[in-house]
Length: 101
Image 1 (cartoon, rainbow, N blue to C red):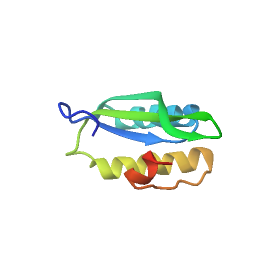
Image 2: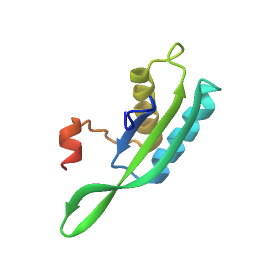
Image 3: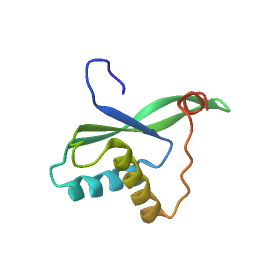
Image 4: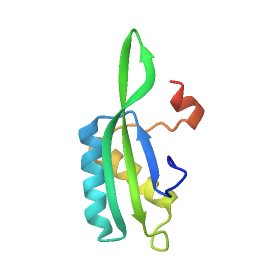
């Protein structure tokens, strides 16, 4: 959760923007009204290496119908679609590790 006022959940990825956008578009059409909106945007990461700033991709999930699918299952479905679309490896980091990469 990013804001204290809202219950919108935000996922953060160090991944290509186009991959995340395509996967979120696919999931949005598959869910057929069980998710209000999915907002994908680039953000500055606090990760700095060799004097370069890095970007991360933030995915905000708005109005997920949790009686239809839980947030944890939605995340697993998102990761599965990402693996199928790009044939890539997904690594999970704890929040502290991710923010301090």
